[in-house]
Length: 72
Image 1 (cartoon, rainbow, N blue to C red):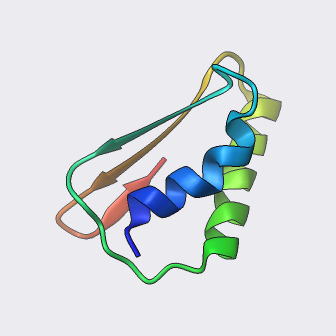
Image 2 (tube, helix red, strand yellow):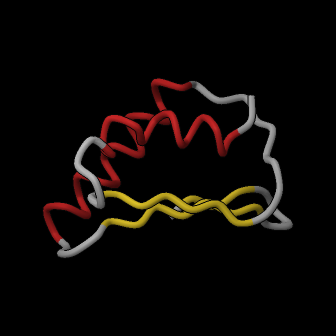
Image 3 (cartoon, rainbow, N blue to C red):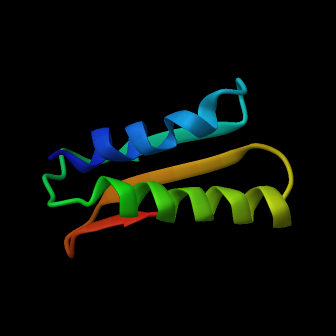
């Protein structure tokens, strides 16, 4: 499975309100073995924390690195 696509799918429920969540990916493809449910839960927690403790647009970025992948 390609991680960028899996992350985009996991974020889809949060993108119901236009402009609420922005998603960006830097770097190339990132094939990975991913539990889609666990990924959705982790990203959901990330977004819920940002909404509760932050303000403004929520941005989720993913990128490939030499060591693997980083999602922030």
